[in-house]
Image (cartoon, rainbow, N blue to C red):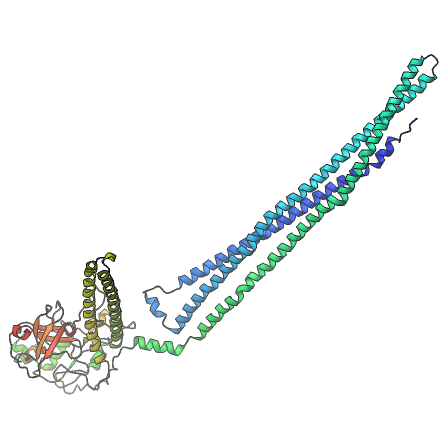
Length: 610
């Protein structure tokens, strides 16, 4: 008879792998959780770097806006203020701050490209690799579990066949011992027992084969497949750790790379600060605001013991009025005309009044005659900058002349370019019509001519100012002995009599201060018998001038007139059209032809012009 091993022995031999499979599965779960945590850490670091780049960009933008906010605006008063060393140093600081902001933008760009972008791609690759490794692990785990199930099924079948064979053997022995049983039944029982034993032997062979196969697979699983998968997962995790460490190192290197440039920016700011020169700035302020006026003379002694012969200096009158205004003083009678436009009022009563009384009356009367300057139409100030002190006026006129010369040069360059283009068209008609540029050339010629006239006008004013700037020991006088003053006459020297305000211009009150408006007083009879001023030359009007103020005369461009009083340094020339019409015009508006031997002979102007 065939003896079979008890099934419990086989069961004990294969019960251990089941526990190992469960433990292996548990380890896969732990590893899966740990690797997912590592990916989360990497993504958290990427988010941190991304927020850092946003902060750097925001900081750079704010720095640029700050620099732009304090940059001087073009063609504004602020731009003129940046000629001082202190303001130029501040401007250099603003420019360096702009470069400083650029370095923070470089930090943001490098961190984005070298860290954020690279790590983002790496995370995607890492997730795919992790998924592949754990997929292989699960597949191996499922395979070993399938082999285990096959072994269990083979074992149960072998156990069942063994029990069936044991029962068949017992039944055969029972039938064989029973004398009442027929021989056929005994034979049948014997055959059944043999069949069952054969089935048990087959199940045993199958179970043994399955067991060997399972052991082989189990050995391969735990000693080859699973270690390989764990090794790959370990390498993947180590690469992740190395990569995040390298990224942190790059994070520091990106900052370190811009430190020399940032240091250079700071060095430039320090250099700009060291270039501040207080002496130079002070000298520039002096040059910018010096007026060119001469200091006032000494205050003369006023002798009140001789009322009819007292002399009052201009400066003492200015002080006596208490408002800084300059007024002329008077002495003895004179046949020379003191004010060109005084109304006559001959009254016997007035002729008998003493000179001192009439002088006091004049001093308290309301002025009537104004200083006149050529004003820009629609402008805020005079075209010739006569509202400025001499030195400031000279600078403004020089700037205007330079500006006009630059405009002329631009127009001439354009004309030269068009001329060359025309020559090309003439030589190569297929390239264009040469006549098409003639109109533009004519316009440019007219523009150049107009600009040259403007230059001549401003150069005339500039020459006038430069002729008056040097210090002179004796001021020209247009008044007679009755009107003794340090400066020229009140009517024609108002630009020098006025005082400049702190910003270099003249206030309205100061401009009114030098207006010489005289009512009809007893002084008129002093000049009744005065002969008209003789003609000393002729002049030609270069520009049209509308004399809208009292004391001026309107002239048309090209008109010929007589000169009866030349410019005494105040920018005005007295002219006569006929015996009834005379007045002042700006000197720069006329071209004067003086005749030293001329007398009061009214030649026909038509002949003069010829």
